[in-house]
Length: 567
Image 1 (spheres, rainbow, N blue to C red):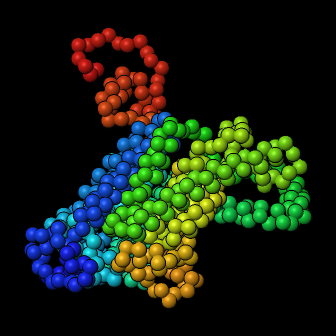
Image 2 (image 1 turned 30 degrees about the vertical axis):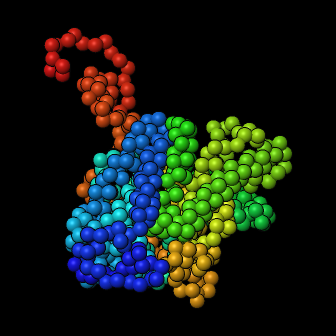
Image 3 (image 1 turned 90 degrees about the vertical axis):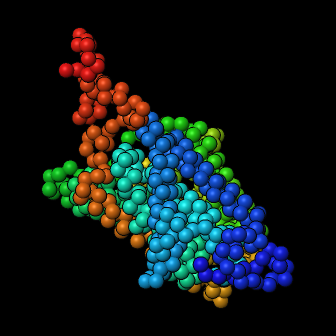
């Protein structure tokens, strides 16, 4: 192995570097790695792992009863499979060097399976080993948790749309072809976005925008397939955009609305047709009301997610230093601001809606249909725990790319803007992505974009250098140029993810191994593996229809034949 240049701990006050062999480094790692750094990054890896079962609780609690068990177990299974993928080739593609094209993908074969991943120092700051903080094996463990968590986020977009076993095939290909390259662009010292100077501390693009865009592509693919061709989807989407534009225009020019209505009525009267009603296209009809399985699961999952985010953002400093403390404090402040904004925002909206119901002359734009709950209006005096959880998670997502770059006082802005922006995006995205029942695209992609833009606005050189090593890239850039660079990062990651995800889905569709579009696939109940034998028995006895999955009326049992299975 090659020699490395390090600053021994005993000589750190003097700052004198020493050239040591790799074998010498492995014999005496305590001379070159601070124990507090190793302990903190190891703890941060465990905290990120806790976020995966937190997603299990949230998705299971939000889903309907028939799919709760699948979404409870699927994130953990997905995290394990993607973690194995990371060991075999994910780390190789994301962080290893490549002689051919090191800016786009890695190609060091010895990194596959962690064969050569052990004690090589991973540097921060200007990229020299004199600023090494943690050994490569610990760095690979920590980054592997990010890969598993990102894949687990995508699980929420598969409710009643993909068989779990087939989803595992999809997510394994997706991790290799989508997550690994985008993560390399943003985080590897050789990544082309990193070289350009984009700011993404803990995963605004590789984690949140990539996962949200993947769920959006998955939802659009399901909509196109269920409507038998893309033309109907595009036509319905265009009609929706036009109708929204007309609504906004009519709010300003009411005379145009009246004239258009009269002309439409007259034209249909001449054609002896009934005037059209304001009915949405079938593609955008709201899904049937589905009550959440368990509200307590959602609250507990949000709490664990909040707790785990300490390692998600704080651990990205790769050491126990003041920058890690600042990152975690900013994360906590953003979550508090987002949760408070979310609950008060919806509470105020309920109040406006309550006044609108009492005063019929009030403009209809204040009647927010998204606040309806089965036709019964919620009480104005009650605060919504759903809104609090949504706001807190939106704040956590928004601060993710900025935690190590922005001062703590600005973190509240991320939480407030993230909660409000995600709330507006959820209302609009619900019409286009009805196969995204948990609003993952609005939450993660919307919050990620907001966070990336605000990072370019509030990035601070002093906060960036709190670890004693790092410097803000391109300090001479104006705010407008830095924001433009952030938007370019968002666009590249989002477009690449959307195109590649659709490509993977259509490839798997060609071999018939992913989606369930048939009646049995979309209306089946959740059947845990331990109950599979009992379900088979009921199918043989005629209690479950294998075509539809519905329960049949029980008939008088036949006389026993002496065998467990019917002859």
